[in-house]
Image (cartoon, rainbow, N blue to C red):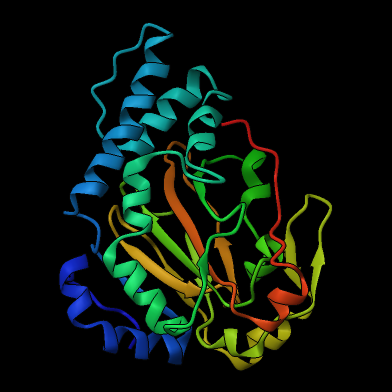
Length: 273
């Protein structure tokens, strides 16, 4: 099993060997509620809530809403483009100290050291951090990605871990991801780049036929860690008035032959913040 509930970052370290064994076997581990009571997580949520409050106040709105997803929907109704101001602060790289305390926590670094080995040179890709807003509506369809691996988006090293955690309340049909455990063992798969810039595994039938599909829905404070080569796909937000907010962060091991040949290149995307 790759699901480890009822842990904190402190107690997760005590089960690190078990967690890493599951990760090596499946390419993914899920830790429900890992960050939910963590002070740095609460601080990060409050930081984002403050940013929403400031933006809403520019339109003379003082919201009593506590959930970040619902605050996003309030802002979306009056100033659809203003949300990008916040996502820019949480993306490429995340500029908020509270978020980076979660990113480089003792548990995460210990996990990376055990997965990559003590000789690893730990780094993060240029575009490794993404504060993701998943809004309802057809115009946001482009953010619903087909079956893909993260590596083509990021590069830097094929030895790469994705950290993913929920920041908003979960509602039915608000979306998540499909994932296929152990598909990371297939290595770097041939991918096709679509017109909207997204990547798609060139032969998804290989995944569908040989591997079992699972769903991941992140509640606020839930954490997942998965291999950057693990195949996964977006589950769209099918609600009419709900949003979900997730933070994604990646880590690479530069001690890798292919990464060395590519001079540790990592992709760069335009970002304002």
